[in-house]
Image (cartoon, rainbow, N blue to C red; front, side, top):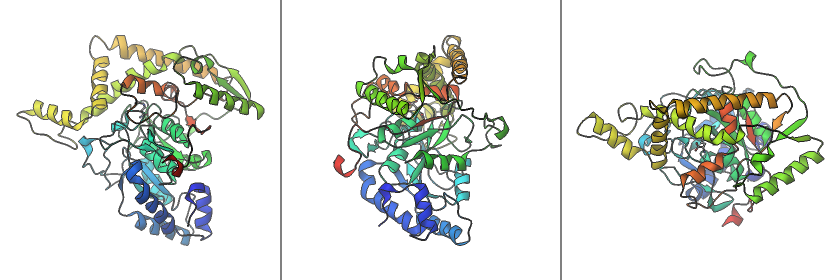
Length: 447
Ligand code: GLN
């Protein structure tokens, strides 16, 4: 039996290299866990039928000496990242039968390494949400406590890894969707610098914010995946050229925006846990100081103008003609209305309305234009702060994972993004690492 609980990419690679078990054995071990637990957790919407075939192909790389760290590693893929010939439904009724016709660049890169793709994971419809409760195919449950959300929008990918149904996963992060669920489930989620990983083949949501990011059990594993998927891509005009990527200049200092962390609405348990982490960092010799970012408090408002604006533009393509679901009406306008009415869930419709409103004539300057100006100010403040600090530290979310169905007001879910959206607005890299559990980690004890 392979000890999946304590397995990392690094250790699995050693085992495969030493012939302790074969790629097929590893893939089978994960397929068994999926069979046992996915019904309850709902991390996967589909498990691919060629997993063992992929594993056997990976094994050949070990035999001919071309294996890399990711060869034979079973990975879960968020249902908005395209794999040729596989369904990618974005957890939406409108794309329920959509099969991708090409591979995302990140997928192509992983294929080259011989990674094994296990299946399509659940998410909030089109990646809008913070709990995976907005999926058209039911919520994903938190493997640590099945009564709670796994976070979102990459809840399926994160729960797959946290529940030992994949060794790692890919998610997408527009305002925290890799990091917040990773925080809620106690694993690592990383959002790369904007443009560092190609967006080609990632269904667009907020095009100036979207990033594909790795989800893993350790920071080292996340780095292994990141190294494999990063790089300039001619298929994505916003992807960064290697030589324009800024280097690091270590100062050994951490900045903390205490004003925001001490604000009303941030759970006491989160504040206490965060303070304990800060003390630990201090005892390890880090210089920790208060950082003042004057417009940080505006980040959530900026995000919830820019993101729906871009989302409404991107979602216009799902009109019943080009892709997916088509519902007949008496004329073209009725076709559109019926298709979108039946195909999109309530949160998606809400964002389309919000987005078209802030972009409409007469309101553009008042909302969208202002949000873009405030975004530029915030970018400037971060540039200034990084002259002094190596990193800015905050909790990932202002409260721990909530009970499924507990938050019926969408605004209260938006608040979960208060710490994460900033990195997307200014294009910075960000990572969520575990720092304690409110409930027992063990899946067994959660029942
Ligand atoms: N929770 C955020 C939202 O609902 C983030 C989504 C994301 O990163 N895809 O917009």
